[in-house]
Image 1 (cartoon, rainbow, N blue to C red):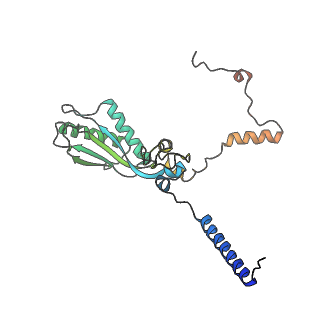
Image 2 (cartoon, one colour; image 1 turned 30 degrees about the horizontal axis):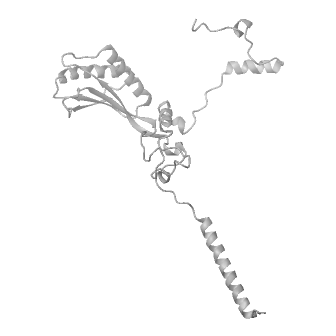
Image 3 (tube, rainbow, N blue to C red; image 1 turned 90 degrees about the vertical axis):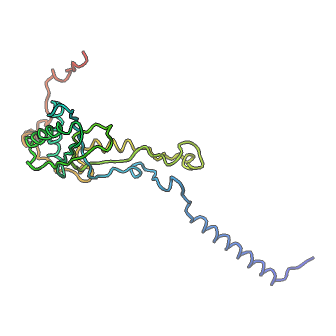
Length: 249
């Protein structure tokens, strides 16, 4: 029969407790460590609104007027384009309209005649007499048709650019998000870009518009019916309740 010395037993017990404490400490360090994210996951958020945000910026609106070499002046369609440009400038323009006119080209003389008509139309719309800044340019590529370029800056909402593919769509070592069922980088870009293009006033994305005044006549009539205890809803005649549209017949 063997016996264990009390000193040796205490030594082994202390060693076991020390090893247990060390293992617990290492385990705690391992659980608090955050997993590393590499590749496209570190650059692209999962939410497409963060990956392709709608931003408000200043951008040019451009209109090109094609002028032949033997005829000056504008066509009816070109006059409509110039008038539309002037009307939108009055609504959202943030700077002067710039007219770039070609020089040293076969249609340079006709372009000068067309420019005078453009300036006259813009003044008729409401632009000041000096509201158009004229610049001259010579096409770098002679194969390109020299046009009169009209542009002005305005505030717009925009998103993108779309069509960027920083990672493979299929299973690949360069695309660790494939097995995690994550959306690809370009997902949602076209949606955000189309939403930005449909915004009439970019300020609506930041703050609401002021409230419009109440319809006083309708409100007075509703209050009068409520005071008398009668229904406040509008009563429609029976002939209008079952009326069908004639579209498509």
